[in-house]
Length: 72
Image 1 (cartoon, rainbow, N blue to C red):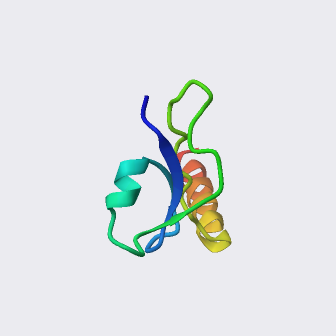
Image 2: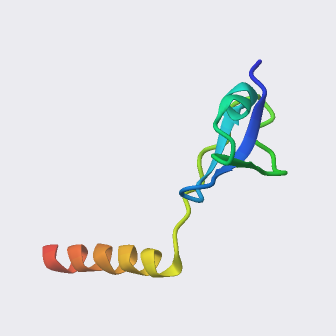
């Protein structure tokens, strides 16, 4: 079974579960190792958690409402 670790991409801030070997082979400073669970109890890796700001989330929500309003 693959040993996953939870990391944050330094450039984007996204959290990912990657195989330990991938983390160890990555260029120094590319990933920040997190002290979090990286896989479900069955061994499957957790999904990514993408970094967004409050402004981006509000924009996305407002854009969705505009599209729905136009269709109605």
